[in-house]
Length: 190
Picture 1 (tube, one colour):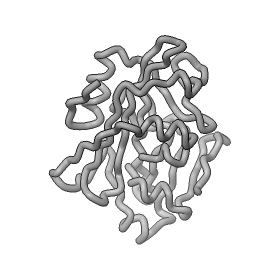
Picture 2 (cartoon, one colour):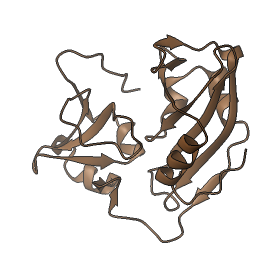
Picture 3 (tube, one colour):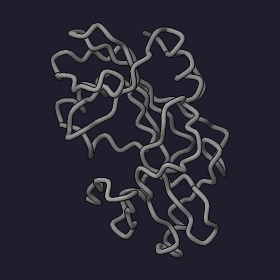
Picture 4 (tube, one colour):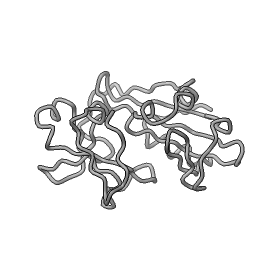
């Protein structure tokens, strides 16, 4: 399937219109269907379409979307990797299957100061004061997700007391403190 879209929000809208109405996430290294509340076996996964979005070279804020068909259940849904972190979250076999034929869309307009309505924080700002920013996980006061789903984690600027978009290189930095809401599981920093 061809995705002729300009950005992630447009891709989600287009795929929802095409019937991709289930929401997928990665749990314990495997694909999990949140809508059906069950795991999806790797042999049942078919990637109908995939797209990578990069705002600028070396911006460190790439995102990916995958239109997935669960052949056993007969359902279709979306896996959104807004933080470009699937390589750390899922099994190598699933990661290779997801990314086998994934084209990249570039925004040649240069770096943007915000992403999905949140102020974007680049690595240089983080390096200047790494204790200022934390990664909140599972907080109920997250702003609305533009994809019609929900954020599972977001950056938080403790000085401004506001949610921010942390680029992927910050998410992979061991200095970033992860703060779960009421004891939720904390992903590995590695």
